[in-house]
Length: 266
Image 1 (tube, rainbow, N blue to C red):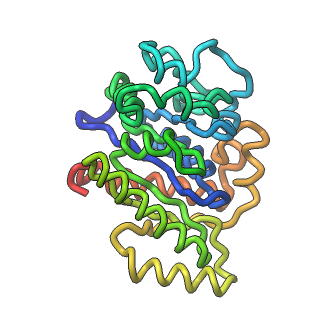
Image 2: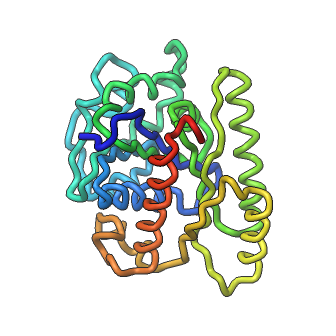
């Protein structure tokens, strides 16, 4: 049951650049929000299935997949799984590779994910969506389903170019659909304070994205990298690790932000 009587927050974790901690953020944010007694649904849209395996799901437990739900009239509740870690999961599958081809003939295909998620939105406080690293129909679908877009960003100069590219992509989607998607959260990940370049990029972000930038910074941390190989979020692998504590702090920051103002006011 949701603990709040208001519109839920759908957080889409997206970045067209790979290797920035996108899946790590989606998985550990879902676990941290759940640990804060929020009802959470994690949606894995990446055919690599890393959020799925990192949630302890390594076998296909249903004949139905998310692609089946989007193409046919199957209810999305039919593919939601319970995990050991207090949050629910819509798992990814290799069939998502063919999403572009399968969905192309559907009417308004990039609106289908939001429509399906609306079937279960009252059951959750937060829906966290892990996007593919490339911009395709599934990523656009996720962005169109978003209340808030969270961009994980490694503090290097190429990442600033990636942020500009993501902003341009969102502008193009808004222009063609009439949506009002915006980047609302920027998260610094894999941060090494000893690295001068990282400190410089962080300072630039503070100057130019003060409203969007999280005060929480995710440090470079080996435990965050190790946890998925054991099929669990870092919170359950090493609860005292610096990375774990940082994601708990991020969950607290977002709860304070969204539950105080509500998504529509941000």
